[in-house]
Image 1 (cartoon, rainbow, N blue to C red):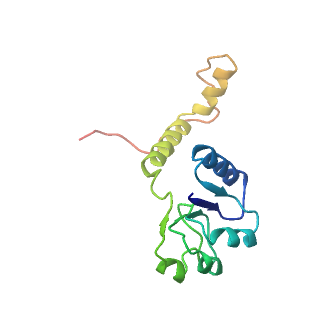
Image 2: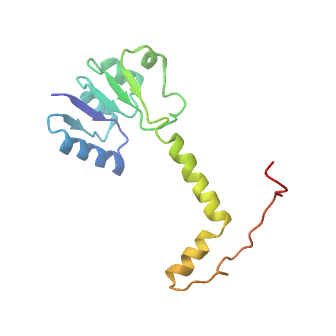
Image 3: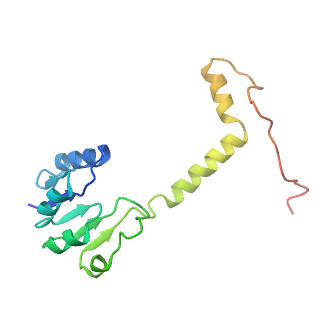
Length: 147
């Protein structure tokens, strides 16, 4: 049975992920230790982990093949020498939102530039007010032509 350890510190999101993983993959042994000491005991024969494995704990991990970092940009010191030399595979979510986030940001910029929050508020108040906008629309450029 494969063993997966969610490394401390635990938060509500990690606990939810652990519960969902256990439910989805009942053949997996999933652990969410609250302390580094318990995590060090569990990581000895774990196949995979999520989070950060301290250098001393990594030395005890005999079977670890996969480490997932839940952050797109890990904190300074996440990649230490022994971890980089280890044969395990390290993954992270970097890049999964690269096109979506740019679209999302542009949507907000366009919505804010045209006063969408004020018009939405007006609509929720069950009135259609073309002057609901609280700030004027400011255009900082000129279109002389599209040549």
